[in-house]
Image (spheres, rainbow over the protein chains, first blue to last red):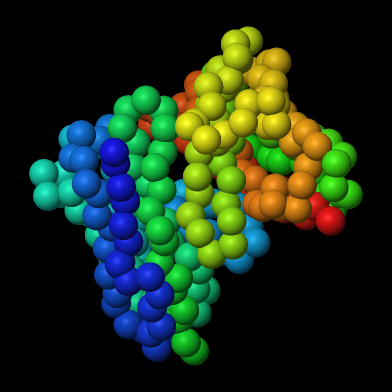
Amino acid sequence: KQEVTQIPAALSVPEGENLVLNCSFTDSAIYNLQWFRQDPGKGLTSLLLIQSSQREQTSGRLNASLDKSSGRSTLYIAASQPGDSATYLCAVSPGTYKYIFGTGTRLKVLA
Amino acid sequence: GAVVSQHPSRVICKSGTSVKIECRSLDFQATTMFWYRQFPKQSLMLMATSNEGSKATYEQGVEKDKFLINHASLTLSTLTVTSAHPEDSSFYICSASGTSGGAEDEQFFGPGTRLTVL
């Protein structure tokens, strides 16, 4: 059974810091992995989608990497800003249109 | 592109009543729609997967007679919580996948519906 874990569960950093969020999954047979942002009481905003054949994806200050064989993905946020404060979720797809979500990392960027 | 809406955004109802939540894909045809539930400070849990015109597939532990799902068209799926109880209070999020022009199998998420059962 696929399990997705995110570390740390919560993170508080001063503005301007570069930071790394971690996601690990137990079954490497995934179709793709997606990183989302969720603001309190809101739905999900897709940040980056990495297909299983890809190693990384970049969008602005965000960079996500995928190491399928070791069951890991990282989300790198450069020059963090208070507006980045949110919960970040990673989700893996086993290829059956399902997403299995991680436990989330609650990020707070202090001004 | 690839926008998914949900209605209502929040609903409060009395115990024992039924509540219907709509999920619409606004600018693409959603061949597959998903319903998730999220309890406070927890992650999303998939409840069911529905394909247009066919019966939904429910995840283990989800009562299909309590959570009725209808995917009658390529742009609309509804989730009806029947005989709601306070423990059904949660954040319900739908997502859709289909001919959006995005990456294959990518899911696009709605803004969620906050259900509170008194």
